[in-house]
Length: 160
Image (cartoon, rainbow, N blue to C red):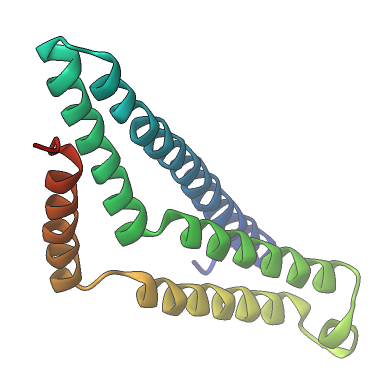
């Protein structure tokens, strides 16, 4: 990393967090929309069909898909990751503006490049610490799977 300038280091980190934010935004929105569509469509198939395929199989698949989306959104938390990475991106942009226009600590600093690299590295480290707090514990994942499976079984039962 010795031959990389502070500006290049900043650009690499900025691109890294921007792409992660974009990925998590897409993932969050697509899964949420799929969850809504599957949840709303399942009872329609049950109610409007006398056919075994459309009255039982399709609603079961839709319900399972909705459950999988819900588990993914609850456990992986792409919406929280999206906001985390976008916030880090904005912090990096703010830091670079200070560097570029000699604002805040950069106006009286002898080695602006070194300060920029240090601040970018610190922001990245704090991002990792915030990310670690969002990683689900393995026992919570198993518990959520069992809970969602029980809910799915209840929702696909027809009253006698």
